[in-house]
Length: 277
Image (cartoon, rainbow, N blue to C red; front, top):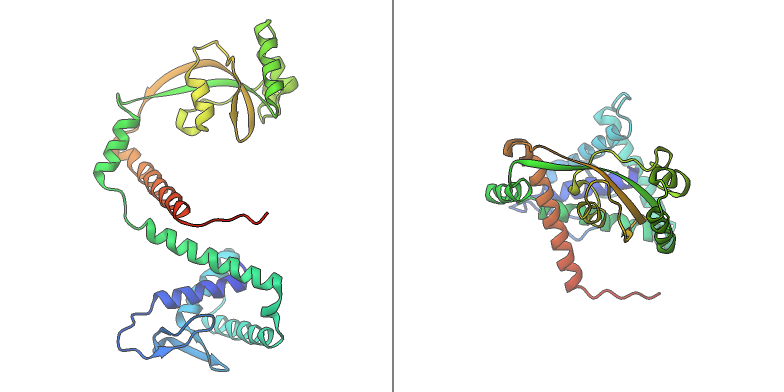
């Protein structure tokens, strides 16, 4: 994390810490007048405050940058923030905020910070136990898991994939073709993939695999973001599913992610998005 980003995060933390009660308002740089705790101000640089919340979060950022190093003391952190503020003010006076590259970088950092905070707020409501239980029963209806072991040939063009399917139909060896033609990471192993569950792979790939019987290969190539796949299903096995308690944490995380993605899709649908070029 850059020092500039650390200061931006510190500003956000100081804003989040405000209670807005009877405290007088304190103007923070880069923000409208917002309620803040005057008692939290440690220093002022030409009238601009350095707060305890800023120091705490800046210290956390420094420790993340250098986890094995000696953590700086609080006084050192305050001095670093003062130096940072002095340089920032000098940059403003020098007209750096009119620099297109710097202005764009500050805009992106601000948007990133606000987006991360909004995602955290939207994900603060955990899924209910009923939702977790329903997803568990949907995923493991009989308490068992189906796993698949396959080989694949991955190519960039559909025509190439169909050509390879024709060669397989004429009796070509799948592993030999994979070693020769596949651009996938398992090409040197004849396209052999580890055991996986349908939920572990891209939906298009999973649909192609689950439509096969052991020993069969896809007669139509499957398209994913990686390219065109020709898949050979070698073996299927059934294993015991995790208990509801064992699966609960992962399912909750999945449900939170899905809710965030759905909300983002709603925001996109509500927004006016125009592409200039």
